Length: 259
Image (tube, rainbow, N blue to C red; front, side, top):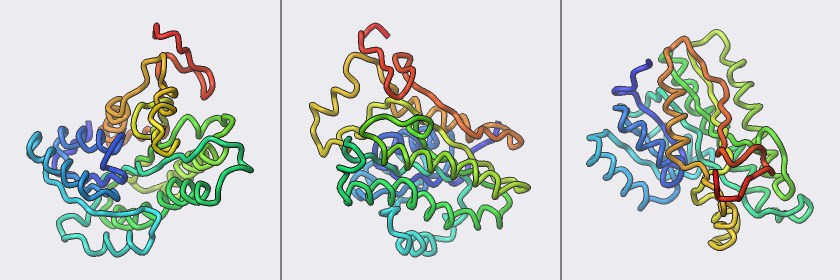
């Protein structure tokens, strides 16, 4: 296994959901955590919890991945001990609304494309040169089953996750002949803040997404991300798709409550 002791893991969107669970998993594995998100209070609370539970070294930065200038400024001003990133987890992402594509607002379109696609690219281009300079690194993108199939009302979101899938494959090709590994972890239904954000804080509508089934948890996804990161150095897990047992495709979900 690839040891993570004293390795620096940079996680975007780390304040909640899958990002938070990844931070907990990597801290338990002995990694140093560079955590980025927009919500400073949640980042601070998470950092304190990781230090207490695991004795982890943690550095936090308040960052919106949609802002390339802020990314460059933030990363260039990191303390010297935090400038070498060994594992990048591109987790920041979201969906907004669930409407036919011609009914999406410009704000919804821009938010999804700017976060899920451009934000991932902005962070990756800022981090990879350092990985190349140090001769090691691993990029792990959080994709989705929406990157493998399209469902009604999710056209723009699905398009962004198809882009993540293409970017993962392309990054591996662009980094061919280097020791840099590239992976994508693509979950189906995971119960986090995802649906609440998608439906503008409508808790009842968000709950309906997971009604009658046992969805994946953020911890389930973090376990797979950690698995990818800890394979031997000669092993590159390019893509992992995981869904609840009750889910067989983007639109086929057993809600009998028996699975």
